Amino acid sequence: MMPLPGNRTLNTADLTAYTPSCGASPVAAYVRIPFRCRMLKVAGILGGAITTTDGTITVSANAATLSTFTVTQAGSAAGQLFSAVPPSPTYLNEDDVIVLTPSGASGATIPMHFSISVRAA
Image 1 (cartoon, helix red, strand yellow):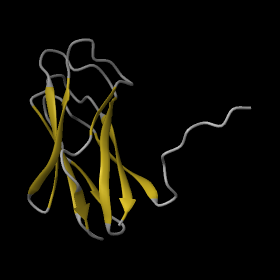
Image 2 (tube, one colour; image 1 turned 90 degrees about the vertical axis):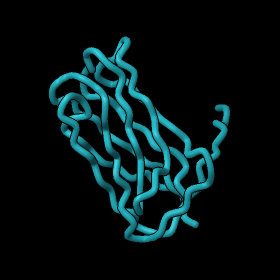
Image 3 (cartoon, helix red, strand yellow; image 1 turned 180 degrees about the vertical axis):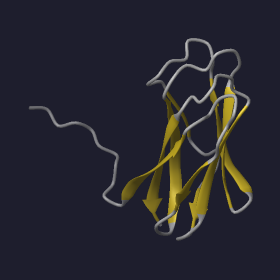
Image 4 (cartoon, one colour; image 1 turned 45 degrees about the horizontal axis):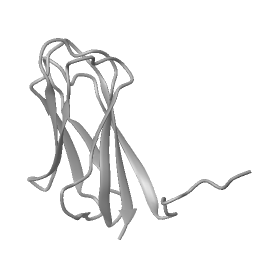
């Protein structure tokens, strides 16, 4: 048996959030930060196809934009993963709230599940 390379530390956690609509009637998703940490990556998984235009997910906390990622319309389908790594180190405190705000996409009530990877600071 060959060992797999691992770069995930024991102090890394995944936080999750959900929006019932990242399409035509977008609904923001929220998640509480449980401890002081650094945000490593944010991702979203579509629950259906968006129909005519790309969408954008804006990730923010404390009234500051931390990252954004595009949800492309071309070939979109349920189960597709979209992600982003913050452009610079992003640190958060316990009880900060991350807001994931969808905009620009089309399609009625297309759900999206989010995952935010954080490492304790």
